Length: 131
Image 1 (tube, rainbow, N blue to C red):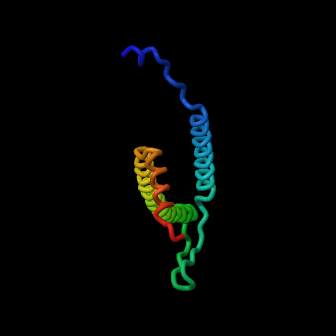
Image 2: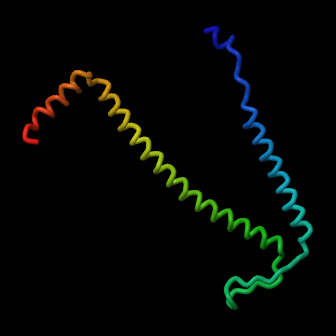
Image 3: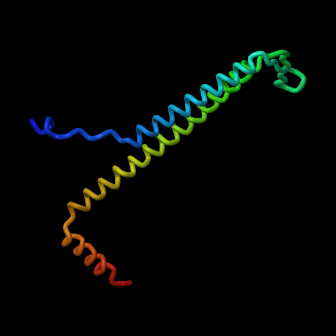
């Protein structure tokens, strides 16, 4: 009962904390760069042709185009990651099934004595006299 009170707590993993800090700093730098880029180009306009000579948009704000490109990229990434996740989960289920089968085989082998194994190999050799 008192062991839990006496036992020292483990120190947090410093590598994980360092990686988290670096990741957050990089995210902050990226957000600042994107925000600055959007502010500098807020007055810029562009003409967009989506399909050859059928869909043309005139004087579209560049910030809107960048935002739309980001959203389309995020949606594509999300769809691809769903298929990847489904494949990984299928592989995990298969490996768990295989692991369970191997554990059952090992449990079965533990229950067999060496004398039974030697007896079976000796009987197999005797039972095939014609070879």
